[in-house]
Length: 124
Ligand SMILES: Nc1nc2c([nH]c(=O)n2[C@H]2C[C@H](O)[C@@H](COP(=O)(O)OP(=O)(O)OP(=O)(O)O)O2)c(=O)[nH]1
Image (cartoon, rainbow, N blue to C red; front, side, top):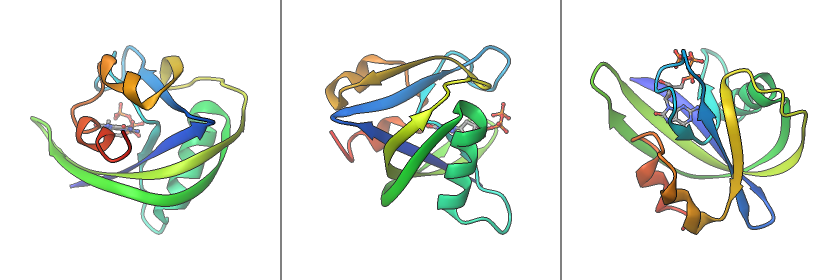
């Protein structure tokens, strides 16, 4: 099982989502950004590190919203979601090719990764 942490990043009433770029696994799918938790790292540390690396983004990590275990064809992930408040960002994208700030209701209009869809119910 792979432990992945992602941020439900709020700016006012909108949430940040980003599209995985060509060449990545699940290219073209939208996600809540984040990444794999490394050995010795807390989930909060991993999330802050990944957001800085992938988006040049600084957030305040708040409470854990929930998690979802999803079995893809080749691997299984435990995707843990934390509520975050946006602070600032350079938006220099390394792993994504688009991003949007959307209302919770708009989220399901995007082609999210399969693991993300049950998470949406936690905050819509
Ligand atoms: N960050 C993030 N990853 C997600 C979400 N939903 C989902 O299935 N994933 C998957 C995609 C990846 O298999 C894994 C996250 O790893 P990652 O994107 O940090 O992977 P990586 O940099 O090592 O690159 P790659 O091997 O996936 O190409 O979790 C999500 O909402 N956010």
